[in-house]
Image (cartoon, rainbow, N blue to C red; front, side, top):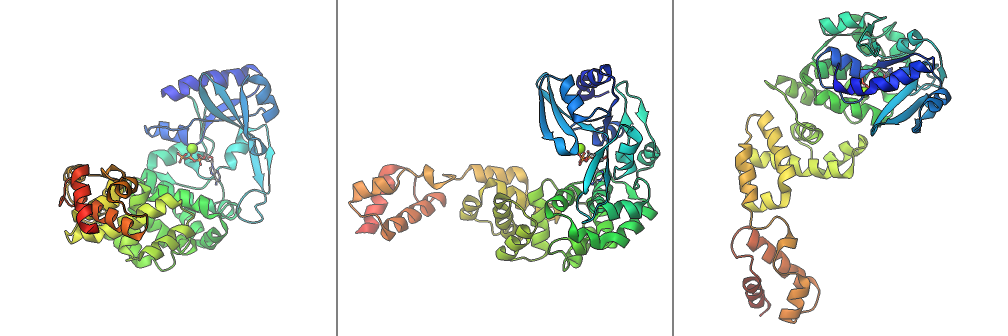
Length: 396
Ligand code: ATP
Ligand code: MG
């Protein structure tokens, strides 16, 4: 077993000692069987949250209303969730209420996909009540139980299905795929933040084109923010020979570039997806850089104004599209800039005011901008005397 499980065994042991059941569940079990790296280890138990808290010295109520208590052990944190069922999803968004139960079967039954409904004992033995192991072996995505009902309960599960198709390069089983197509409109009721997480994981997966194909074929895209006019763009992406996207910024930049979006449209799209301002700013800059890379008109000033991060994002996208430049060359050119930001300029407003006896105001700003430009493009050296002499000329 991976070291993460070995370390967590003690925690499971303590729960069992107290007379309860405890298992590893969820993504970590799935990924271990697939031989993939695991991130977090989830634990499910028959003990109620109050009972879990009695067993361990240090616990935090991280999601107690859903039955999750975080146990701190040897500097590590483990999320321990009580077996539960979820009932009547009136709004297709989240369970009306969760009910704690004592049976593992009931807990596994409410999970989304068979490959996510496996449990593992501390000794590594797998409990497979829904043929998840066979689906894992065959590379198949299948809903637990009646697919139609499961997607009706929580529409996000449809996005999760296409996300896993991409992430694991699996095929969605026919009945499950039909149920997604049937219930796709329900996705419109799901919180954008939850859809966003799955969408990004879809694009960054092993076979994003497989996930995207399902995303289109089932019409799920129609119920995502501002995607209803994007079919042609998704088809363009499907036609790319290979598609390995490095990060979320590159994913959005690819989409925005292929959609020929203006900066304000990029902003509108990403805001609708509830993206952070930092991400939006980077995608705006990178989207504008892509055509400059294509037309080979990246000049020194653009390198400077864009920053290395956005240059790399844009170049990742350009590379996907077949006109990227060598990343080492790009980094070297950036490193060769005389300054990386205006604070590295050897004069500032204060120095100019004192030396040239000018007043703060538009003229000062103008001089500083001109100095910055000339230093960046290599017209003058970034030395204080040189800069002051040039500025003195302009003031005259
Ligand atoms: P990842 O590797 O991306 O974390 P994961 O399968 O662990 O994938 P989580 O969101 O961490 O995904 O959820 C943990 C487990 O909870 C899942 O494996 C699944 O069993 C269950 N689960 C998560 N979301 C849902 C859902 N919307 N409906 C039903 N079960 C879910
Ligand atoms: Mg997980």
